[in-house]
Image (tube, rainbow, N blue to C red; front, side, top):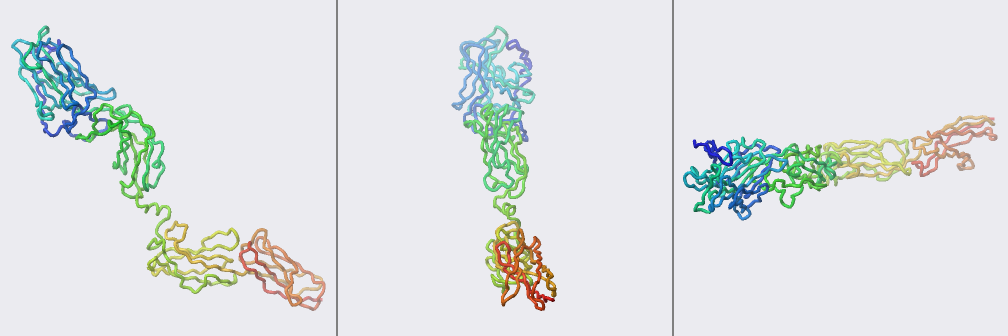
Length: 572
């Protein structure tokens, strides 16, 4: 081991023991960071050159000198390097140094770093000071705790291949022990030796030349973004059919607000960038650990307001899913702003199921046919007292094939104003699509047989209408004999309900002079009942016929009708 030397008052003991970091680099593969599983809270920054060799900015790097006739030169934009140079003429004093320093932003530390560099240091006359190039972190001190790569004139001469930017000989991975909480990396060219010495002039342009050809620095920043969803269809939509959107407001204390992340059942299906920050907030790619790479230390905006982010549900399979929307910053820190159950319905089938219900029968044919097989006319008249009206038919699809196992509805709507259509029965079709209804007694009405192609439909796919007119059923009884001067009490009722408020008008009639004559007009109670008292003052020994008659009125859904006559014998 060389004897200890002093540089700027610091011992150089151990510089040889540090040696050169052992590396294996493929000349076409500039990713120097060992692949690891992606971890939130970090991102890459490329300096001077992208992995494809194209020029990159040098954000975070600054140059300085501590002596005359030296330069920190930046030619990265022209495809060059960050060069720390000490002139070969005139002589340079000990402690003269040119430095390029990388400084992490205040919200981050350096997690990993891969550098591609070349170093040359010219040999000087024996007993003179030494020219050298060296790389350090976390402090710019020439000691074993900071120097992780060096080339000294005596024993080195040069390192790397200037003509091959990402050549294997140029690659240096900063050991993890130098980056525990580090915020700086230094690239130096210097004149070293005892105090008061100097590096004399040499025959080459630079006695020390350290060039940073490229850098891939991983920064760690663990502060998550603050975010909220402030609007858009995704906030309330339960069924996703067609394009959706969400309005997002977010801020980030670190490298900036980057992406919206859409997850279906934990799988990421879309990651739109919220604001590309004039092109800075775009992933440059090329990393091997799954994290994003940029060319600026704070690539993305620190604040975005009400950004309208579209979402296309067609990228997800149909059916129910857990949908999450997260916001990430450039380092991959995330905040969840939406987490709820949705149904992806790209074809509209689920929307149909939700709004129209399940298929009614073996097919959901909106052009189905109800074919009548009974001989009932579409319009007919009957008495309420009659029963046994049967309607039969067959249900078929538009091709004539039977629709099996379908519910066919029997509906009715009384003829009085304002009456609504109501269900009166339901049957299922058999294997041949056949159906049959025995229609219950009822008033004058529209009777409808209806097929709804889906169970929640409100409009029938097919229907048969029957217009039924029904005579009112009027019952009345009275005593067969009554004495002269005493009252005969007639009692009766209207059968079948639908009595209008405040009762239905009923006429009491007597058959006299070869025709029916009205002798009283009265109203029923709400149950259709009525009563009438009649006193015979003449006619002893005679008999008379009476009946109750209801005339047609729009409020009472029956045709006009009369009761059977009752005959009364008047006794003296």
